[in-house]
Length: 350
Image 1 (cartoon, one colour):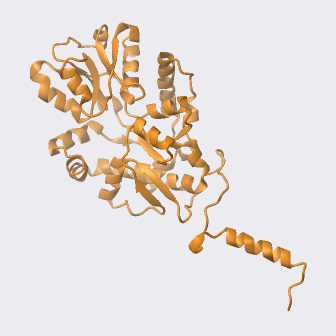
Image 2 (cartoon, one colour; image 1 turned 30 degrees about the vertical axis):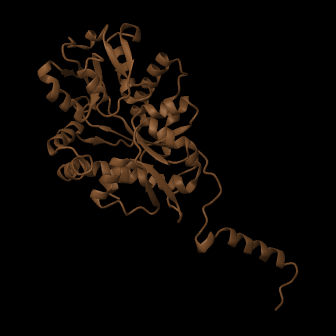
Image 3 (cartoon, helix red, strand yellow; image 1 turned 60 degrees about the vertical axis):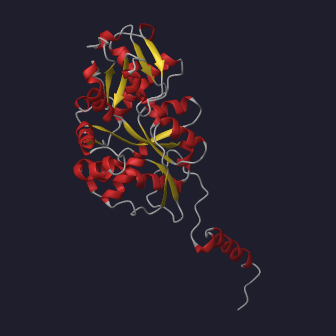
């Protein structure tokens, strides 16, 4: 029976809608609608979704645990780590997710790049498992934080080590005027070498460099001292604009859950982690790997970020005072829709 002229426009509209909902090859097209900041996170990831992720150590953990191929979306892994590289990649639209400490989100915001933290972990018994110690150059007499007065201190603005030193000075009752801050990049062996060559008197050194520095230069009088502060934040963060894409917001939720499970897997499988990451991937000795595993301790992935946000606010306040930048509200750096994702993933085991 012929279709009446009244029905033809309606059928045509339905056909156009159906065609618009399909991408080339018959795959559903990604919704063009933006996800509002207060809207619930989508729980399913549309086909064709892809994330570019700069989180090299988690990539290895996922490979070792067998979870690397279980994502419902495509992943392109970028060999990018640290705040400066990650922020640069964000600006170039070459990265969706980065793994950093607490400082990069602050500096990105100050430089006009809105970002959001979507996952957070810390270290249980954090003061017994610090990320950094203060390396002391051979022949320099520093036994307490008060002894930092008048010393030349390695300083990396925009990175965790730089913020740590500002916190240490405040704890010691000192200001930048009481010391000489020497700007140096904190990458690789720069800080240990600067200490050994007496280019600086004090530098925050982390990871395996703590062990290597005292082993190599201890006979010359090189030492380290604890700073007595928490230095354990570890975050995933993204551009705020990325979270407006509902497909990517859902994929990021899935990745945050896998990231949390990978963190627990590393803690529960130390021998596999030492062999697969520290030895095979990083080229360290098994002894160095064991040292780093013991140093890290047990991860803490809270379902409530309130305490973490309060500590982050303290960091912001110190940095703002020292740099002249405006005080940010730490709460604004976090997307609380992701707050319980990691903890729930560990609890549910899926």
